[in-house]
Each structure stands twice: as C-alpha cells, then as structure tokens.
Length: 299
Ligand code: ARG
Image 1 (cartoon, rainbow, N blue to C red):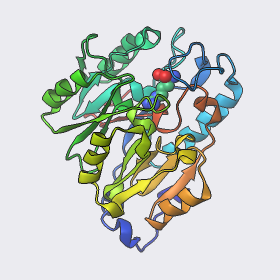
Image 2 (cartoon, protein in one colour; image 1 turned 90 degrees about the horizontal axis):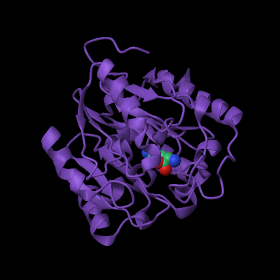
Image 3 (cartoon, helix red, strand yellow; image 1 turned 90 degrees about the vertical axis):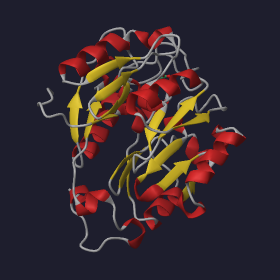
Image 4 (cartoon, rainbow, N blue to C red; image 1 turned 180 degrees about the vertical axis):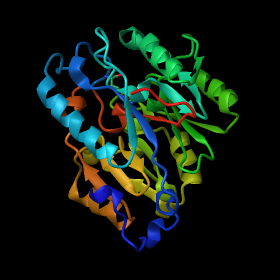
C-alpha cells in the first residue's frame, strides 16, 4: 500500500517525524458498527437523525477506515453490545497511557451502559483500569489529547467532561494538564475541534473555544504551527483526524485544507464517514489509541 512506503527523501517540514526514523506501529481499538444506530439525541448532530443512518453504509464506511488504519497501525476489536449503539465511538471508552486507562464516566446515562463493556475488555487485555467518579464526568480520548511530544495533556470541558476530572488525570500520569473550555454545542468533545499533529502542529477550529483557552493554544503553538480550520471544514469534522507519523486519516474535507496539510508534509487519506456524522462523530472518534502491552492483546 502507498501508506507503508515512504519516499527516500523526507519533506523538510516534517523531518524528524518519529515514524520516519523509527517506525513504530501504534495500536488502536475499534468496534464494528453491526449494532450502530442513532437511537437518542445527546448532541446537536443527532437531532433529526434518529434511526436515519444506514447500517449497510455505516459498515462499508467503517470498513474503509479500518483498512486505511490497518495499513499503518495494529487494530484490535471489541465486540459491539446490544443497547450500546454509540459503542463504535471507542475514543470515548477512556484514556490510556503507560498501560493505565482512566475509564470514562459518561455524562449522559444513554452511554453509561458502555462502561462495563470497555472495563471488561481493557482489564482482560491487561490494562490497569482506574475509575473516574460519576461526580466528575470524563469522556476519555474524546476530551483528552496528548501533545505529539507527550509534554502535556490537552483536556476539554464543558458539554461532557467536567473540569474537576482534569486534576484526576494530572495525578494519574503526573503530567501537565491544560484545560480548554468548549463553548459551541456542535463541538462538544475536544477531538471534534482540536487535533495535535506530528511535527508539533495543531489543527483546530478557534470559535469552538473561549478566549482564555485560545490563548493557551496560541502560547503553546507558534503561529507557523497552527493549522486553522474554517467553519465549513470544522462541520465536516476535519479536526476529528487520526494522525500516525506523516499520515492523517479524516472525513472528506475541502481541497484547500487538503493542500494546506500536504504543504506541511502530511499524507491525507480521506474516508467518507457520513453515516457517523449523523451521530456526531468521524474518524478519530471511531478509534482509541492503546500502548502495546508485553502480553498479547486478544483480538
Ligand atoms: N453520539 C456520540 C455521543 O454523542 C458521538 C461520540 C463522538 N465521539 C467523539 N470522541 N467525539 O456521545
């Protein structure tokens, strides 16, 4: 495949990308959409879309995402469970680092039933699961993203995750947590409007944040490292992108954003994910990043 073959010369903008010098295949957890449906409304995207998604099309789109990701990463699967139609969005299961998972404590009762399923899978795969109390909702990788150099954790709060959960994350991994306030209901998870990328870039939709949060982003990322996403691309979930080395896998975006990413050295892989947009998610929501453990992960 084209994704695994890297040109002999490295684009100057991304010289030093980890994946070039020392290829490491990351691991991601996915959940196939056999039981996926929009069966309730817990974000603005789901309104008007209840039972309006096609499972056949969802299966096809998900399979293309699975294929694209499998060419650059190891993908492990959790079985879908009846009564958990949003379980396909494994990014919300929790946040994992160094074998420890902060298990999500979902804000909406509609998704709380997923918690035992993810706990069981993660525990049996060998991860140490830490519970986040119900009093401090936390929605996993949906609201918590490591900087590409792991120097800090960007954590969103507002619609779903409570800011009070952020100090728990800080104490679990003993690292700096930078809290970002989400103020546009359409961008209810941090991973819908913010994406730290390799090479020290960040792609984001500024209007999803309050002024103080924007200033935190601008203090961290120099101007030439900021990839500002237009509203038109933001509502296509452009920021909801999976980045492995130089590759960025995302829903379909404008030619302008594509060339902007390419000019910075990224390979852009677009996968149509319209059926998942109806539930308020795209590429990045459908995967959860995991460290490879010493013991073999089941699949
Ligand atoms: N319907 C799901 C919800 O509202 C979508 C989750 C999208 N996940 C994400 N990481 N942004 O919870």
